[in-house]
Amino acid sequence: MLDGKRLRRGHPAIRPMAALFVAALLAPACSFWGNTTDTSGTESDSGSDSEGSSTATVGDPEHISIATFNVRLFFDTKCNSGKCSGDDFEVVASASGFEARADEIAAAIRTIDADIILLQEIENQPCIDALASRLPSYDSVHLGEQGYPASLDTAIFSTLPTLEVVSHQDEEFPHPEGGTTSFTRDLLEVHFEVGGARVIVFDAHFRSKVFDDPGRRLAEGQRAGEWLALRAQEHPDALIVLGGDLNDTPGSAPLLALEGAATVSRVAAELDDDSTYVYGGNSQAIDHLYLVTTDAGEHLENSSVIFRILKNSGWSGFGGSDHAALRSNFAAHP
Image 1 (cartoon, rainbow, N blue to C red):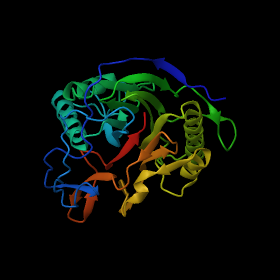
Image 2: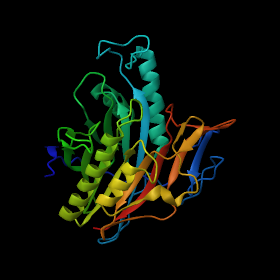
Image 3: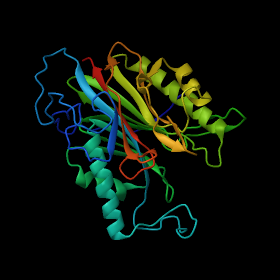
Image 4: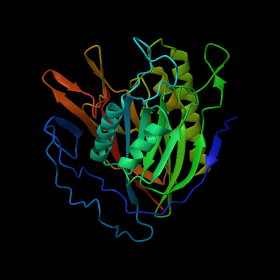
């Protein structure tokens, strides 16, 4: 039986949606791979105004941009695990280093310019607070806290009012090799409202391949897909999107399990190059956005953009991370 933990409901003030296209000056080193910018990072003329108000009438679809970004090891200034030296996993930032890192991540989020952004590898509430103070336009902020020292958590920032928040961190489900397992990081589920339409997003960060447990990642894919299918059944009028660092590539067993459990489409498949991470010199797509197929929501064709930094011999991640960010546009039908 699927049983998520509902945390809270809220209705913050509705504010105008952010523009669907990049509205910031792009640094020369940036490359946004997709159809809203060219590969040199030149800004496109979308005709959109990020501060403009909507003129949509009742029944018109609401356009929403959703992004995923693994920010990479955003730790605070305290040694929460008690092991923060040498080759230990947790790294303690200096006060100035923490502020600089928060500035860097916040600048990246502003450049991505999504109405909803799914983040991974955020340590705790102080890290979230540091970002939120720099990003006042994101007035719906939620952390999927794992609850142990130096955990790397999921988080969701949005410009949209929150209806409901559901945590999946405490649930257990079958491991294919026997026994049970759980989500490596909280599968954070948040419901938003825009123009009378419900938008449901899931922020996922599956098991990494360091000290790998492929069976756990497979189980995570299966379970995440089951949640998508259930929410589509419960909310046939909702736009439903899952995104995050799934730590596996298209055609892998975990992604096939997710795709087999729910009727979904992987939106970045429309790109010629959808890679978001470089490992061993090879580019691969491990950060994804999946849309659940319903009559209430659709992906806007040719809207996917990948944010990365060009280097002499290739590219690296974005905003100080080793991951690129991925953003795409959707329509929700009230």
